[in-house]
Image (tube, rainbow, N blue to C red; front, side, top):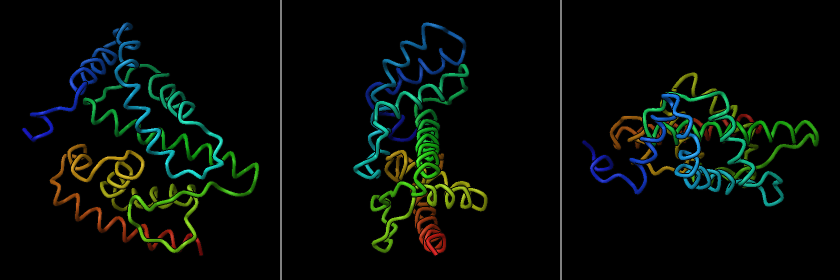
Length: 195
C-alpha cells in the first residue's frame, strides 16, 4: 500500500464508491457522482484552461459540461477508482480542447496557442499550437505510450510527478526518467512541426 492509499485525499473513497455504483447501473449514483466529482472536474478544467490564450472563448464551465457529457453520456464505464477516472477525464478534456481548436482553426485558419511552461519544455518564444501539441502527443503515444500518458497527466491533468506515477502504477523514479525522455522528444518534435 502506498502513502496515497493509506491517506486518500478528502472525498477519494466517496468518488470511488460512486463510480463503482454508477458503473453497476445504479441510476441514483449518477446525480450523487456529479455532486462529488464536479469539484475535481472543475479543477481539471481550470488547470487545462490556464494555458489557453486570454481571448479563448470556451469557458471552464463549458469544458466541464462537455467533458461530463462525453464521460457519462453513453452510460457507465468501468473506472478503476478516482485516479483512473481523473486520467480519463483529463484525456477527454484534452480532446474537447483539441476539437474546439480544430473548429476555430477551420474558421479562422489560425490555431489556439498554448503555453507549455508548466511542463518545462523550454521552447523558443513562439509557443506551439494546441493542434501541434496534440499531434506530437499522438506520435509519442505510438512509440512510447507510457511517456505520452505521463505528459498528458502532468500537462493536461495537472498531476504532480508522484501522482502521475501512482495513476500509471510505476515508481516515481521511473516516472522521472520517462518525464525527462518525453520532454526531450516533444521539444524536438514540436520544433520540427513549427518548421
